[in-house]
View 1 (spheres, rainbow, N blue to C red):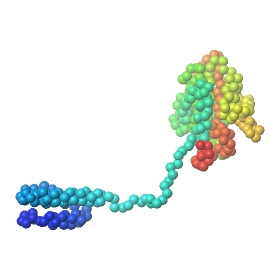
View 2 (spheres, rainbow, N blue to C red):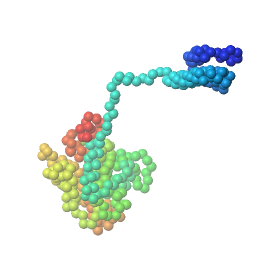
View 3 (tube, protein in one colour):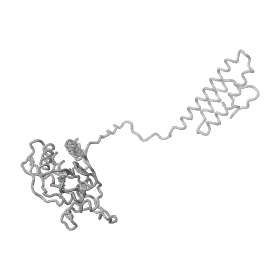
View 4 (cartoon, rainbow, N blue to C red):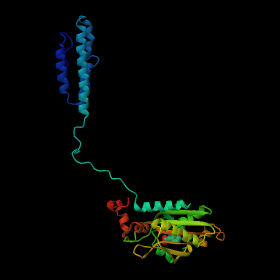
Length: 337
Ligand code: PHE
């Protein structure tokens, strides 16, 4: 394609025409570099002509030089353009720009999380710290250290989900059935006075229905200090329930039984319909539990309470089916933002 460089030099018009034809004919990337060398390389047609300017009459030189440089500029710009064109994806992306955009949904705090945050804040205001413990627990913490003997009905009552793992000194591994093992873990590592709340997931092998789900949340309260009495327990619980359900909330304690508290009670609040609704279990720390954690039960006493978060949430917001809380139904959950 490149004409001989010897003999009669091509006119500048002929050079323009040749350059245009060659640039237009380019079909692939691979053709670009040879074309550039042919025109602008060390022995390229433009390069040689620029070098030859010195042989021209002085009067002709500036105009001829300017003209050659214009062509040179045109060639390199066109090469760049063709390079960009040939690099662009051939297929247009599969986007319909005329469709309306998709809104970005913002998340919200789950009502159970909001309730746990509120309870944590309330007790922080009374000077309680927040403790935590593992969801995969040992039998020894979940049952033994809480004075729940091997053959005690409470073990079967809890319908425990066991982990398929080697059995060690601490017994089998399981998904904790309540947050009470945290009492033991905390008292083992912290000397009294202890004022703490703890909250998190708990598990029982229940089939889901309106009032049971196999994974739920509990909040545990633990106090151990000198001179703690049942009056402290009752006062603390009433204070909390009136903060949570409203200042006029009626509260009653019913005698009950838990192996790790003595005496024990269940706590009810009076609902708007006049009926009593159970909200938690509680009692004074059993001396055996304190002793097991290395605490002098003659000097120290304490109380503990435990409540179900889902239950508190349902009573607070007034809905009847627990399963709504785990349905992932955005419209339902959005009401509690
Ligand atoms: N752990 C008990 C339960 O799950 C509740 C409880 C906690 C009772 C602390 C007394 C004291 O039913």
